Each structure stands twice: as C-alpha cells, then as structure tokens.
Image (cartoon, one colour):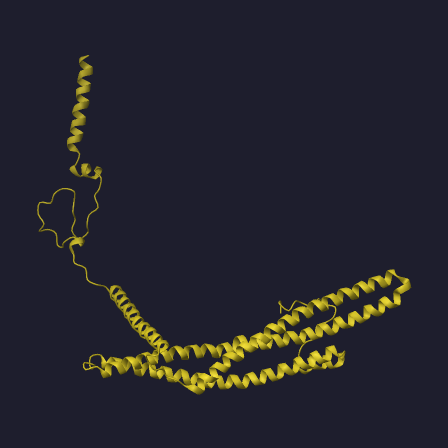
Length: 324
C-alpha cells in the first residue's frame, strides 16, 4: 500500500515538473488565433498604449472621390441636363402647336412644298388601293388556276374509264391543262407587278414620307423658338436670356433649312423614279392581261421574257401569292 502511494505521488511530481518546464509560448499557440492588422496589430486584450500604432485604423481614414465617382457624377449631370433641355423643347413645341390650332400665332408656310407633300400622300393612298385590288385579283385568279388544274386531272381520269367518251374527255383535259399553263404564266406577271408596286409604295415612298415627318417636326421646333425669341425681344427686360434664345433659334433654323433642302431633293428623285417604275409595270400588266384573255400564248410568254420574268414550269406546284 505504501508503495502504491509513493508511485502515485511520483507520477504527480513528474507531471507537475513537466508542466513547469513547458514554455509559455506553447500555451499561447494552443489558444485560438486572432486576425491582426499588418499595419497596427490589435489583439483582444486592451492595449496598454496607442503610441506603438503607426497609423490609425482604416475605418478612421478619410476617403477621397475616385475617378469612377467623378465619371458617374458627370454622367448623371449630363442626363439631368438632357432631360431639362428636352422638357423645355417639348413645352415650347406643344405650346406652338396649340397656338397654331387656335390661330394665336403664325407658322412658317411653304405653299409649293406643302402642296407637293399633300400630293405625295394622296398618291401613296391611291397606289395602296391599286396594290390591294391587284392582290385580291391575284388571289382569286390563283384559285381559278388551281380549279382548272383539278378539272383537267378529272377529265383525264374519266377518259381512261369511259371508252365511249374518251376522245371528248381528252380534248377537254388538254384544254384545261393549256389554260392552267397560261394561268401560271399570268400569275408570274401579276406577282411581279405586285412586288414592284409594294416596294414603291411601302418602301420608296415611305422613306420619303419619313423624311417629311422629320422636316415637319423641325418646322414646329423652329417656329416655337422663333416665337419665343420674338416675345422676348418685345419685353422691356428682354435682355435677360435673349442671347440664349438667339442661339436656340439659330440652331433650329439651320436644322429646319437643312431638312427642307433634303426633302425637296428626295421628292424630286422620287417623282422621277415613280414615273419610270410605274411606266414599266403598267405596260407589263396590260400586255400580260391582254395576251392571256385573248388566248395569245406566244404574246404572253414574250411579255414575260421582255421583263425578265421567269416562267413557272407546268409540272411543279405553283405557290400561293402570299408565299411570294
């Protein structure tokens, strides 16, 4: 028993001696580490003095605007200025339109040009009506050709099954096949006519009308700034903002004159192009219709060759005019 006690006390003494001999750094290493600032190392313990810290913490350092902040500020101010200018211009133009309708202000009037513009709009309206009717005619005629083709096939089938009427059925089948062939040729001419008139009406004329809309908008802006300048000139204290009004007036006057010159030139070239295109298309339409309904197959084919229109082969299925 005494031996057991002596051994236990010996173990305690040795463990105690081992703990004594353990360096203090090992206890620190076993403790959880704390992230420190490489410039000013802080710990969880309260520092005894702040003189050892060479710089203040980052949260206390005042920040300066960067280049990104400057560019953002410039963009924002530019957008605000654009919105301001747009609002002023919109207000002036709306006021000008209202006063024109009420007859309280004058407007710039070019009688010759505006007459040409009205005629062009009327021409587009009439050409659109011709285009609509030509499409309707082509659609109806396409169904006639399809019916003739089906009728010719029916006659041919009956000719094989009715020996007593074989000659009559074959004669009518051949007639319907010839009509189908000529009808497909006429459909090619009609589709070419529709395509050309559609391009002229909805692309060429529409492009000029788009320029005319821009010209009319510029005319309203010009009159609005002109009226604003005239009203400021008549006021006793009109010198305030007069220079800015003159600059706005001159800028819109130049834009208005530029667009008016462009519209005049475009309308001149459009009129020449319109006459040339319609002369060709009306001649094609007349010759093709006349040749088909007079039964002149050679004249019909010659008309398509004259205008470089490819003739559809009789054996292939003719597509709908909507697909073309």
